[in-house]
Image (cartoon, rainbow, N blue to C red; front, side, top):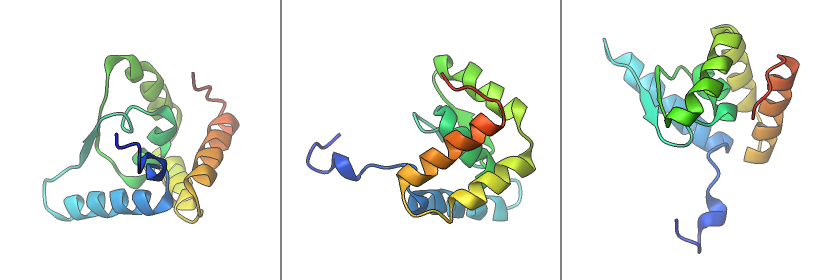
Length: 113
C-alpha cells in the first residue's frame, strides 16, 4: 500500500514462491499440520497452479474467485501442477513466471477470465 515501494511488490517473483514453498514444507514436516493461504494471491487463478504445485493445502478467497479457482483445481493433476511450479521456480522474474503460467493454462485449454 506504500506508493514509495509498491513497485517492488511481485508475488510471482521466484524468490517469493520459494519462500512460500519453504513455509509449506516446514508446515508439512510437522505431523498433522497443513498450510493454508488467504487473500488475493490465494484467489488469483494464475497463482492457483503454482500454489497447488507447491503443496498448498487450503485456499481461502472471496466468493467471486471460487468458480475460476475450482475450475483450475479440477482440470489439472497434482503432478502437472508440481511440474509447472517446479519449472516456475527456475525462472528469473515474476513477469517470466506469469507468462509461463498463462502459457501452461492455455496449453491445458483453461481460459481465465
